[in-house]
Amino acid sequence: MPSATSTARFEARISADLHSLLKHAADIQGRSMTDFVVSAARDAAVRAIEQTEVIRLSLADQKRFAEALLSPPRPSAALKRAMARHDELFGTE
Image (cartoon, rainbow, N blue to C red; front, side, top):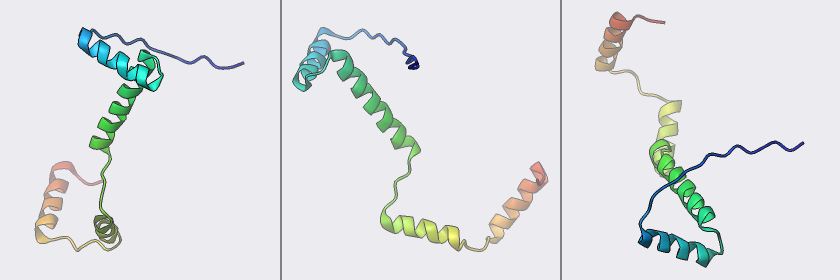
């Protein structure tokens, strides 16, 4: 037996000009206005999430990052003091 797809409803009030613009764009692509708007909203949401959650590095930066992970520098005196202070305040695990 096929599983039922869960859906949710979304409503928005838009100007007549925006409605006409969306309708025209949907017609050009041969899609319903609902399909056009839902697809455009999904694409915009994915893009917004990627821009804040995905870090993109150049090839040179990727190599530098990998090198730093594989051969990290020795902790500086300041870092050692900060780690000791952290342990004093929060304890060690």
